[in-house]
Each structure stands twice: as C-alpha cells, then as structure tokens.
Image (cartoon, rainbow, N blue to C red; front, side, top):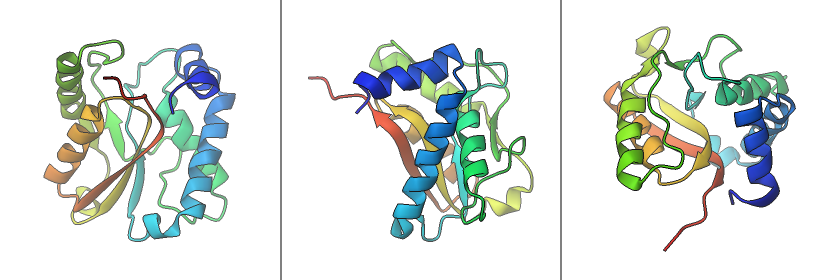
Amino acid sequence: MYSGALKNKIHKLKYEGKHGWAMIFGRLLVGWMESHPEQMEGVDHVVGNPTHHGRQPIQHIEAIMDAAYAEDVTRAFPLSPPGAHRLVKHTETARSANRTLSEKRAAATAHAAALTWTGDTSDIRGSTILLVDDVFTSGSQLQHVALRLRSSGAADVRGLVLARVPWSG
C-alpha cells in the first residue's frame, strides 16, 4: 500500500534523489522475482516504465532497474544492464501526480506515445514483458504502456509495482 513509511521512502528516492532507496527497491524486485518463479516463467524482458532522461533529481525507475541488475549477480533474470535500458523515454510529458482521473489518462496516453524500444526490434516480437513501476494509482499508465508494447509486437505484458494507492470512494 502506498502509505506510511513506504510512501515516504518512494518520495525520498523520487523527489529528493536519495539513491540508497533505489538499491533497496532493486533488491526487493530481485527478491520478488526469485520468490515467484511461476510468475517469471516465460518472461523475456524485465523493463522499467521509464522516466524522461532529463528528470530531476533522478531517473528513479532507471535507478531501481540498475540496482536490480547489480543485485542479480547470477544473471538469472532478463534485466538490461545499466545504460542499456530496452524501454526509454526521450520526450518529457506532463506528470500525472495530483491530477484528475481524466488528466491522468491524457498524461498516460502521452507518456506511452513518448516511449521507444531500443536495440533490435525483432526481440520484442512475440515476447513476454514484465513492466515494473513504482506506484499504481489509476492503472492508466501501465495500461497505455502495455498497449504500446503490444502494438509493437509483444505477445504479453505483465505489470509489477512497488506500491498501489489506496482506493478512494
């Protein structure tokens, strides 16, 4: 649940650039993958839902993914090495934090449109992708990114988040 101490630590990473939390979240990601082999079966790529390369104070998702790669010393999982992320965002788009649901949906559409699969595009065709993000609020961003990956040839896109925002009535 995106509340209390977890919310605070995600904020420390995301908005204050406290890099140490990326290492911890990367370890959590690898620990989850190790303890859920049935969920990892058939996954061809584990990618972060990218942030813009100019994001300040830190590209927090990329930092988490780099930490996960470092933690996976046996290379048991299909993580990209630091600096070679498979899914990148070259264009800044409006942030969805503290927006209405319709604004979040519009931001999610723009975010997904700004993404590029790097490297050989043949390796996305027919692949299963585990898409990692920090916070699940409305689901719009994961949905739009998954649709973008599917339209690029991915056969299946699964989502994994560190925390989800409590439902509101």
